[in-house]
Length: 175
Image (tube, rainbow, N blue to C red; front, side, top):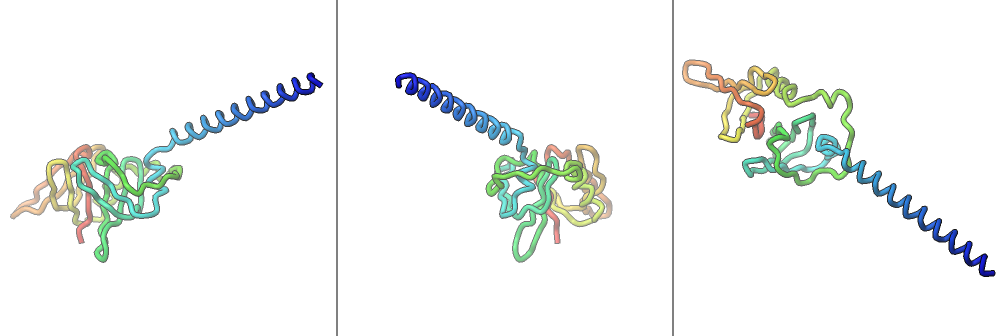
């Protein structure tokens, strides 16, 4: 009878050790999955209102319309809707970000900040460009690898202001 108890105890210990090992493996896998999630994936999964604090302390809010590596496009305001392009390099904090993630597809992974700015440039729309030093109204012109030229209305001539991407806080369409 003692042997039965001894082997039953041994089986219980082994089963407990297996459960602990499985729980540890599940926790390790979960931690690895969470560690692999990037901001773009969470932005793509965000469906509701998103508030973004910029490096100057200001906040921009809206619904996520699109995102790509290095940027998010928000639709803000009601009844007048404005689209606001925010470089993620200017973001200090986010409120309302989805907890889940959507892996970016091949097309989304190629939609860089430069590509998004080129789309705005080709549309020829008036924009408000906010930088770390201030803001300027104009129209996006040439978009380089790390900068954008903004055509600023000036008396009697065309003034061009070149803005490095690193100083951009956001670009808002003007109606």
